[in-house]
Length: 198
Image 1 (spheres, helix red, strand yellow):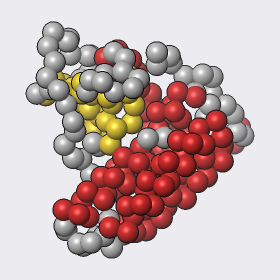
Image 2: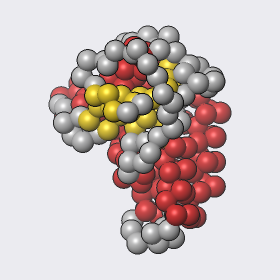
Image 3: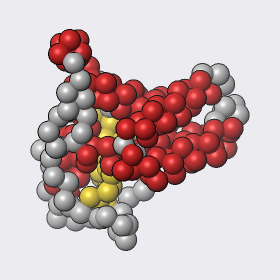
Image 4: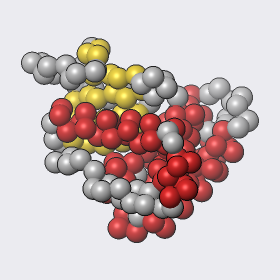
């Protein structure tokens, strides 16, 4: 049994609460995410059981629901970049990789830098992050879903939009691992609006 799961979930809730204070326009989304984590957190460390596994997936998916709106805002200084990067790391550590929902699709060219695997496109970064794009019809916002280690992070209208979401997440992770000491010395600054996801 991984005794650190409760500690990871506690930190996850703390990150969500602090980010909620900044992204006030997305308060309902953050509130729903926090409630979802709290509903499942009591079961995440029940040994190596199916119930614990499902609880960890639920916790990760609830937390990941805030990532799309954050990326869309394009409003992020170096402190926020590190906070969101840590949130993604916690999601990765809690969930691991798990199977994602997908539907068959045809005649869709494989995006550059991605691999076509069965009914999905997958990209693994140099740092080991895994992003997957699958088709899931009848979802609000579009029929393409972007997953991070199996947790859905964004829904897009087309495959190009989906890859832009993934690239934005990868860029954020790279910035967080980059020269943040220089940014910190310059003081907080906001980035211009991010790429269009429409």
